[in-house]
Image (cartoon, rainbow, N blue to C red):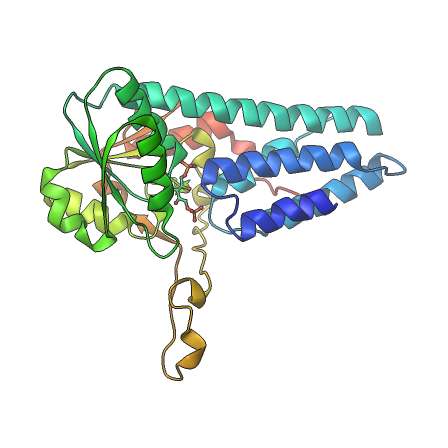
Amino acid sequence: MNDLLDTAEKIRSMEIRGAALIGRAAAGALKEFALSIEPLGIEEFRAEVGRAAEILLNTRPTAVSLSNAIRMVMRYGGEDLESARRSLAKNADDFVERSLLAVERIGEIGSRRVREGDTILTHCNSSVALSIIKTAFDSGKEIKVIATESRPRFQGHLTIKALDDWGIETELVVDSAVRTVINEVDQVIVGADVITASGSLVNKIGTAAIALAAHEARTSFMVAAETYKFSPETLMGELVPIEMRAAEEVYPEISDLKHVRVRNPAFDVTPHQYIDVICTEVGAIPPEMSYLVIKEMLGWEMEGRIL
Ligand code: RUB
């Protein structure tokens, strides 16, 4: 249990972050937990892994990759303890493999939409958006990237370090400079925490304002999202919970002030009208096709409870 609690704490504190990595880390932690416990029988096994899944689910509320990954892992079969263990471990391995392949495939698909000489603006630190950028660069296209800082956690610093390592020409801007630079940008490429049934995007706070600026400037706006970032719950009418994080992330001395409070939402919602294309591992689709992705790729049974 200690390793699982450790992973849960790393996800909560954002030592492990980014929707794809959160999903893979949760799947891996559940697998290790299932392989390590010594229950008396299959019923006890089910109860223990159920409790472990619940702990992981409660770490961060927004990214649907977490609940979709756990749901896929928890669909294990097996009539007895050892076969249930093996089945769960295989589901976890399959999820991780599927995720890594999807990130690579999206890189290939999305990079075809990047043209020689493009300036790309990206926000936060999305491994999937970066897969597109790196694949385009590696295929020989000369591109430039403008990266936002992404306050308050400065995930933009991770992005510029990766881009620097790959040798990609990059400019760092403060989040509020987006309107100033947007006319130099050929396309915006961002990742996703959630794609809803209507094709709207939930991603790092600030994404919606960037989409508005891009829309006004007629700059194309691309989202990079694996199919497990699509939310079956939204098809059932549920709203995506937006994580509110600690005030101290924004203003560490907040306790010195008596009349001020900080509001620190971690994500915002970009309406589908502002999105030109969503690059998934099954193709580059218009946001209006999100309903079909949920239906075809994730299956109707996704509406069922996870645990
Ligand atoms: C990360 C974030 C990323 C998406 C996609 O937020 O909003 O854009 O998770 O990332 P946080 P990826 O830093 O709060 O986790 O493409 O790597 O899944």
